[in-house]
Image (cartoon, rainbow, N blue to C red):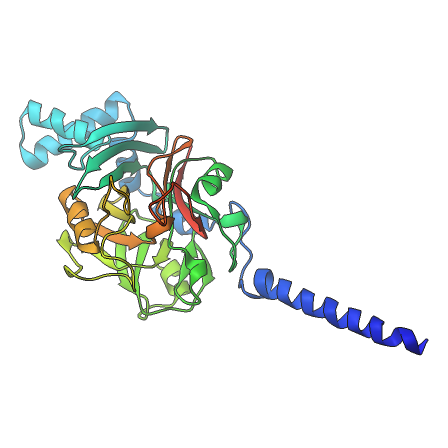
Length: 343
């Protein structure tokens, strides 16, 4: 029997080590398992107010009563003419971003969301901007690669989008590339260690704010109504003003890059933006140029997400932009997460 003791012992040690590696990668590293579709909708309970209903009626509903009430309200506030009132109604029904020189390349609408997708040529770069109006911020959703939170877990943006029945999606903040930085998705805290970066928060009331992650814990943010939070940055626009220096950059990134950003025009009125870059057709944008673009289309708050080879926009079953890392070929990079609108 002695001659079997060593190989048996070695096999047991090897099996234990393999189990530890698997647990460290896929279980120990994640504080909470993300189940596909897991949400904390309780934060919306106190948001089902008349103001939310009015927003829904004003932006999405096609009923004659809501149109009449909206027109009367605007006439009383602005004392505008019938022509001006009609123009305002057109703007709120889907596209109040500046579209000067832009080409409309896609549209979609359901009971919860209205989307118009535009292509711009800005600073010798193709830039794609999705103008989004939702009846509630709960329709700004997020999803993880492979359907769960964990490090070393990546998939292409388009694949994650397809798995979640998304009509529109962009890459997120690639949380899996870092050990720190709050991860709050669909009202659930997955990582509560802050990294001192600007944190983008989308609240249940439809507002979007950039906060200092060191000032509140992740759970405090959720308790205060945070539905989604992203840690990458920096902040691009705050209160309608550019909030990034001319030469500011993310880490050691090149000055001109493919970029991904999100912004808010008004509560429940958002913009997803992705730019090309690193190709002969599209140079790419600096952070300052991206901020200037966001400000120029009327965004009040804007935030930079993961860019470079990660930058991808998916709409209606197709990749809209030209994802590339080297510029030599179109190739999506695997990412940790996406932000999306469901069909």
